[in-house]
Picture 1 (cartoon, helix red, strand yellow):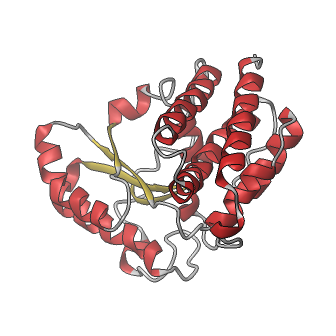
Picture 2 (picture 1 turned 180 degrees about the horizontal axis):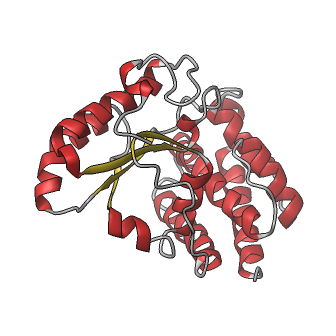
Length: 258
């Protein structure tokens, strides 16, 4: 791919498909312009990945995820990127994933989950298409998935420890965490030989079938996240207990995968 994409000029359309884009989908094109101005010929590639890379499939609460590849990443590059990253965070998005070309090539064994997600759902907004033909080293993939599940469960319990008697806060904590667990469940399913899924309810259903868990607490939290149910109709304590149990069951199943 060349040094520019049509979507940069026609920001109202998706850079690849040409479909009309919501305002939140136009932001990556503005980001590209800022990165071009800041880094010049040091900018190798800018990639939109995740749900925002698929028109019409976005969760309105999802982040806009960006991979930015530079020839090198030194304090000078970070200094040049600082106002851009600050602006991007103010737009309620996570800071772009900033990698050098060397890091991009050699890091797939350390970040197999991230690279699988990038490869499966991406749109090159600028520069070289580094994704096509990317070989992901899965040597530590299973261990990484288990690590992510255990680490997120530990953080969930730590945060819940101080708010167990405050039902609203506990419910919000679970609602904020369920999307992240769905992401890791998708990788657990891939490890087990299932197809990659991205709809969260579909991931939960497939996880229940594959690993024999109860889908109900996850579906309840997803419905709450999507405002299909009211918080006042949910008992946070029993839901939290069941939520932890089912997450633990998935971890045990992943531990047995080879």
